[in-house]
Length: 443
Length: 156
Image 1 (spheres, rainbow over the protein chains, first blue to last red):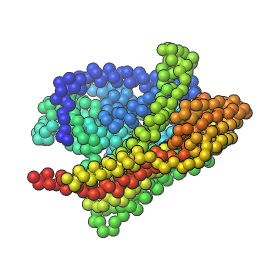
Image 2 (image 1 turned 60 degrees about the vertical axis):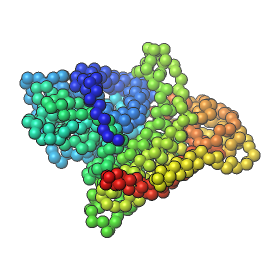
Image 3 (image 1 turned 90 degrees about the vertical axis):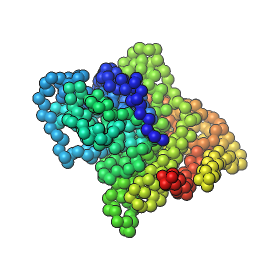
């Protein structure tokens, strides 16, 4: 299947070039985000009746992992409100570039941090405390506020969206999984970029800002670091930027060679497996350990969590791909072949989230009417009773997601193995056992 | 041609694994009673196995706050006050694996207070593993046909 350029459709192109539709969505999102912080801090401590828990960890999460990431890649980043206040402050403007820029430090992020290791660490930090974070409104409120203020702080020190690009715990995995999405932003003609003077898509111009994600669109080969902010569509003087519809996982045909991205794949795969066992399994001791932060059982849980992600999963994977006859360094094979875990991890998260979201979605109806749990009844639905949804469809849907993920990963493994000229069998076997374990946990 | 035939064969094998009826063991239905303690945020025991057609009595005793027990798929529930017991009786006439979960908000980890009821065979698990085996072992010949086809197309 070839690419279909969506920006050829005048309505789509105009909607993306115009700043106002995006600004309207941004403002709605920012209001919702600030309300989630406030609800977390001043609303009821009962998570299932608090807007911050219900709308962030059930509604937003469902949209993100079941729709936005698989079908739109970094589509969420295009409308995420977290970088907005910092960016407005950094630019000294809300819409078009001002005549005079405000004097912030505008430093370049140090080279040692220009990777996704910080995002890996920030995700793991949240993951270790996730049982508390997912269920305690004031913790969710504090974390959401901390993300907002971190983004503001980094915007005043560093250039562009340093928080989104290097620190956001969510942005890291969205970037990883956005490679599987059937949407991409790419240039139309490379030669146009080569001869373009001033590179306004990267450096900015009077009509728009330089890429907030610190990416030169002319060199884009994968979705990972393009935040789909559409700024380059506005600044390109040659109309050389396109948003394309493409086959799923088109970016994975050229496997990554970066260890930070490889470990991101293991972190996400391992977290999905651990959450499925701890949160959705029948073992109360695991839940106690995960929830009682600071207790000795929690420390054991944290050590086991990190050991699974950094030792067990990568260790078994490495054992499978060790081949003394191959001339390519093991590190490079490890990074390239771990590309196969990207679709598998995404489908593990889809299967996990289906269970979590479908059984708790009915809380959204009640929280709409009483978002702070203060006894309001705005739309007459505050007393809606909890009722799991579509439970008869859950097992088949999870089975389909997991088996489909295995097939998708096996195909990706073959392509990645072809690139580094090794056998894909060990990777497929690894994916098979991981899938069987996840099936056992969820079904 | 060989590729299409293999693909057809694979799809047919997949359909058999996914939908072929599994042998049902002929065990006479019994009456089974489970004493389940509920406390924040777990059931004990939390993993129940019964045969299809069994009549199940669940005596739910809450040892701390009010807890409930809702069985997914059966859409039935029972609630127990602190220190009290309540009974849920039903016929396990739907085979498969079902989660049971607390349906009364009982604290922070309430949404994750979950147990598991297996009625007969966990057929979705077995079928899914069967499909996974089929997918893994059939992948190589199929994709080699696909690769060959792509190469031929490129040469043309």
